Length: 224
Image 1 (cartoon, rainbow, N blue to C red):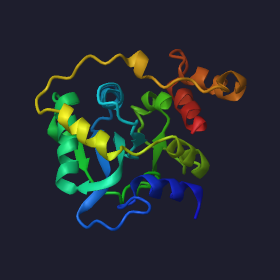
Image 2: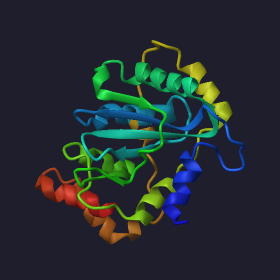
Image 3: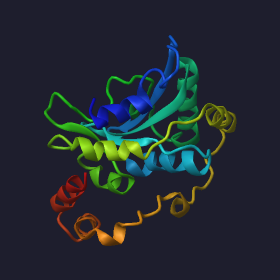
């Protein structure tokens, strides 16, 4: 089994490792915002679940067509209805002003990224600092590297059962979203960031507003 598949199964398989099969229960939760892709809006959810609900960060992905996705992993399976209730409460808390037809709330795991779409484009997992770059083109032209995708997943942890229950209690329906301090929610830079010149160069191109858009996108793809 390759490393990417191992990480996907660790986080999103229907049952957790060493856990008995639980029919009608799920561990993988999908929240998608599309038509158009809008990381400013979905990023508020990504930051909010960490800052407000004290949950592990979900995986970030582009769907390969027209939107962004957040993939939540649960340490223990829960009933499908409860999982969907959690997603609906997140929607009301953070995305109440978004039209329903732009959102997808599901508990399926068949569409886990990375995968190739009929168009030939690819869905892919993203590092948080790269997510904003893909707003205009939420896809990859070529298959993302399996090792790089596995690296993104290995940093993630599933939501523990007690934390999931506590988050549901905090997500009282129709509660207004609090102000999120994006600076405090941002991931800390890695210890070796200052030693990686090629990565610093690509990040510089990606974040240079004066650079042509196609070059910024290519720099982001190279970082994957």
